Image 1 (cartoon, rainbow, N blue to C red):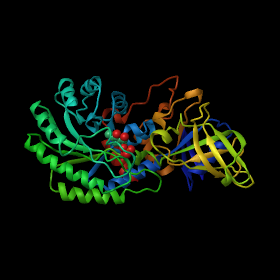
Image 2 (tube, rainbow, N blue to C red):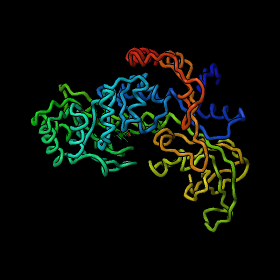
Image 3 (tube, rainbow, N blue to C red):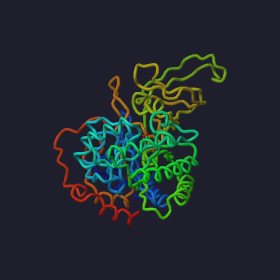
Image 4 (cartoon, rainbow, N blue to C red):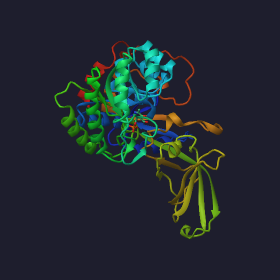
Length: 448
Ligand code: PLP
């Protein structure tokens, strides 16, 4: 493993390297006390290519809510994805990267009127709805909007079900809303759904696509020019996961229901692009040994380790995203494994990261790494109790870097999470700003 270039916080590597090896190197520099992420840019690019290969008919519109780290967003913008934004601030963030408004869908079925007006001023026309009141609001704020009706179709099991909150009934409500939109003079252009984030069933996409197809017929009969199908999110993101199986279901269902149609198909993957690219490193700064009555705990002692990131920080994903996390110790000491627990740094008893896990003895100042931490972690984290949020460092293979660095201008704020850098902020002229990423698109394709 050889670091050939170090630019801002990107490590450019030559020869064989691993994420764990790079994290060890950063730690061995001896100045690191706060938790940090190592983001592998190559993972994002590889996932983009996997998507293009397996779902050639489906354009990915990355769901910004999942992880709004600028480095990830800029990489995806350079690759040519679209974006799913849920608020004014997300639209601002994405248009600020030079992404054209046609590559954005405002995919929040319950929007603030002021956010709709903002979308209108910057030319983001495409937006979802699932209720009559939203139709009335959109009519007032942006009558020329291109509307996408969101229907409910839930996977039998999902890490985070969403149907409880969004999506109208496809058989009863949707036909009525399509007619109502026509009465209001609004244009419905398509149908969307979200089967649930971290969906554990693939067949649900076939059911949802079939329901959408029926609504294309009803929409056309109501006078709408139906031309967009939005498959939402739900795709797996953890390391080693593959969308091959779900892609087969989707492709077969598109062929059965939409072959030969002039229908644009998009999806809104979030965790698919974000999860595996980010590995978190956290340090043990305190420990306690306490007596335990639990017979499984062996020698009658249980070790509590306190680490510098917790449920108010990155591990909010335990509460909000129903994640399970697995620590990988980097510097175990000699000795028998013992039942242990991991606690975050705050003074709250709720701040428990792993309640029971057998671990070899860990030193104070030892580090643990957690893989697959890129989805629904950073944007939700808070610096409660004064503990800083982890910063993102990035690593990339030299071959890929030589292409990427030509494509977008990297500024300090690509690397800072939760605070802004002081000092001069003028970025170099952006190739994205004047002519959004079509040209970049081509170059990256060739290299990877
Ligand atoms: N689209 C919408 C409207 C969402 O609400 C979400 C997640 O909450 C996503 C896309 C991303 O979903 P996932 O991360 O499962 O791909």
